[in-house]
Image (cartoon, rainbow, N blue to C red; front, side, top):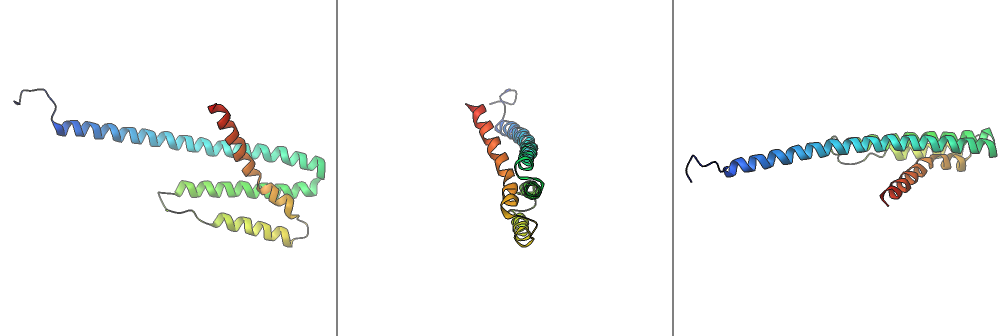
Length: 147
């Protein structure tokens, strides 16, 4: 080949492919983080909506004392969910494993509920599990959209 030939050299082609791949990865990463932030926001909102609905039902059927127990558990569940999200945010950038602070929160909650006579364990525990109901609602919604 002569130098006037307009055929690109191998190094130019590799350079172009690398630039295209890097921009694709950066765009994909930004899109994924946006989807993740949207997922977190949606899970918080669903959890709060289920908590409000369940709290109202518990007040109506069981009274304020049991509803307060439920609300304590539900608030602890939201804090647990936030701690989990914070750990996932740090995963890969600051640390390579999840912390166990969340489990300590649940253990302390159950110990306090068991030792303090004003609290009942079952409503506190069911309140804590409210965030799991939010996960199930989200899962059912996503699966029904895909069909």
